[in-house]
Image (cartoon, rainbow, N blue to C red; front, side, top):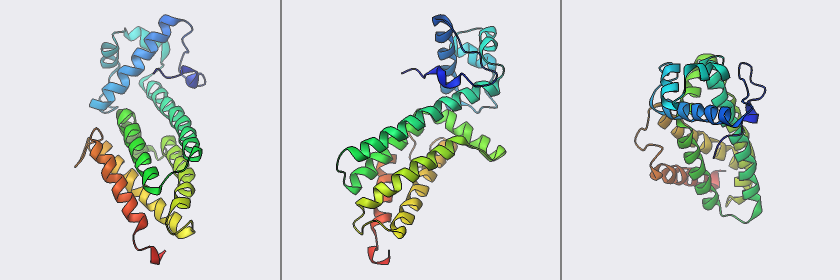
Length: 217
């Protein structure tokens, strides 16, 4: 499914294509960028590499993007837009029918792994960029997702919702996201993002952690 380029209309340094050939060329470059960033860092990525992969000219690139930084900002904006839409969809799904606590945790772990795997290169480059510049809008959107998910999980907890239960769920999310960040930065780790065992182990750890020693909560 191709990204909606209307998300980029207000991006400084980007020229919105008006006709179908220009749209196809822009989508080809964005797709090539996502794929190349799975294999190399943003610093290693060159405009020539990108254009060769997309089978377009460098002139076509500079007609649409002022620089590589603008191109990467476009990739980030599209990921952010998908995350906002996905967050709204997930909360609607959570509220649409009854869930068990384990079932919701497994669903969250599965979708977070798949989302990280699908956007692996852009997310890795964003994490590195955040370490240098101290700002990451994708991280802020992730936190918004967590803030919405925590009370929904707390209501399903065997001990019932409470501030202590929510604190434990927040820390479980920190562990889960830490696992995904580790896999992103280290191109895998014990279990790579492509391995479904990653989501199963994340869900297992999350569930056991938030439900153990209920008397202490």
